[in-house]
Image (cartoon, rainbow, N blue to C red; front, side, top):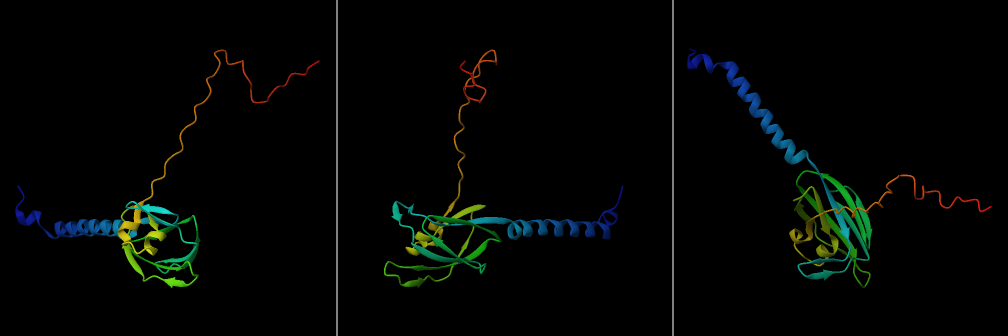
Length: 164
């Protein structure tokens, strides 16, 4: 039988420290190294029962990655790392005056997050302008029923009779 002194020697503590460091590194990399996609959206949208019209023109910059222009019905995906990000929006109002909104800080709650420019321009809190982007697959088309003998029917070449 080993004594407690033999079990808890220097090797035990070195191994324990290595395990703790690996677990801490894994947690850090999961939270700050994971890539998420932010989809910046300038479409007419409905948030909490109120409709917000898409802006005619907007200049959007996310995390100092460079500004991009957005017209109506434009959506672009931006790959981001980390959890906390900033967005700045400059847009033209109906009188063609350029208006710059204050920089907004937000975090990405989903792997594919959609943020609405019209909602932010309307003054809504950023939490209400964020939603998860869900892509729906198109419905599968039904294949035509095959003939029993496998020889009848059109082979895809159309009518090939010679008409003599």
